Image 1: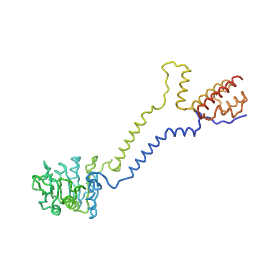
Image 2: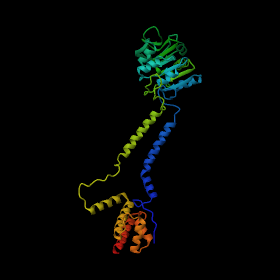
Image 3: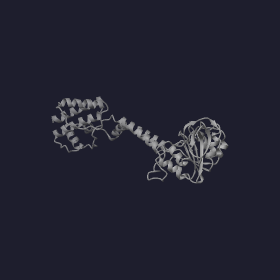
Image 4: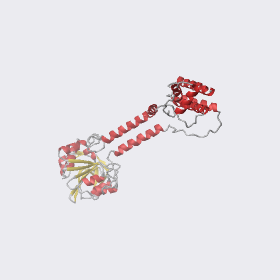
Amino acid sequence: MTVILTPVLGDGTTAAERVRRRWRRARWTVLVLAVFALVVAVLAVSRPETSATPYAPDSTSPDGSRAVAQVLRRQGVDVRHVRTVDAAVRAAGPGTTLLVTPAPLLTDDQAAALAKVPADLVLLAPGGTLLDLATDGSVGLAVVPAGGARGPACDVPAAQAAGVVELDAALELLDGAATGCYPARDGVALAQKRADGRTVTAVGDPALVRNADVTTQGNAALALHLLGAHERLVWLVPDPFDASTGGGVDAQAGVLPPWAGIVALWALLCALVAAVWRSRRLGPLVAEDLPVVVPAAEATRGRGRLYRRARARGHAAAALRAASADRMAGRLGVPRTADATTLADAVVRATSRDPQEIAGLLYGPPPADDAALAALARRLDELESEVHRQ
């Protein structure tokens, strides 16, 4: 009787069982990667309506400026929030106002680009280079700013409309080309200079636009008059990583969206955590010669203990079946290149056993537990003894 057998996998398991076993090993890795992908997707597509960036027109924090920006929008002013010098230079044309919030990291080239825009400039707590370039050296930084509430004491319309404000006098006039307002000792809180068809206004204390201080004295009125002079306001809050200089967009600018940096940092953090988590794995086994001679019985017992510890019953059963099949094939004169059906038919003829029983012993499913594995070894030994008695 001929039995048609399906070749068995190397460890004596079916393809479905291998897939399930691999899924059990990899499911936590897949779960971590899925969570990581979900977080990256959320960060990529979600954009909060507000931020916590100081002086940003969408920030509701005490250091933010959303209150002033919202009032300006209600008054019909088009407030455009930009983060780079290139964007500010492109947007700040004639008939607009460019607000430059505190930017201690501006380079000299960036300061020069901002100082040359044709728009009216409002500088909040400017650095010395930007202040010097924008006012042609007429205004400098005071050595010791003086605080307190004070009146305008000048004819600047915005200061006259605001009245008393509470701002630090952090500027000083270096010549008579600029007008100073809100004086205190040797300094002023506001300095304004008109030249080349535009107005440059420097305010030494940025408190007039902060949410926490805008309602103090006439700070709000001063901010609204200075920033609402034109229908369009370009609000620059420089990105600390911005390296543009207003000379045009280079080949790499604009390739990535603004949130790409945050997503990249999050991805790097996740990659580092995954690397630490998986670094404990030793990788695939590498075969090498033993440095000493190990008795065969000891090597066999050691291999058996490894199989037991790993619960690799399928591999143990496959090893037992392969060894028995090889010995019986040699006894029966079946070549090693013969297929499973040829060997099974030869064993059936030699033992007169049921073909289905022979197929189950030599090519059946892996044992479910240790008892089944022991029973399989005993039955293979009995079958092999019957073959050798022929």
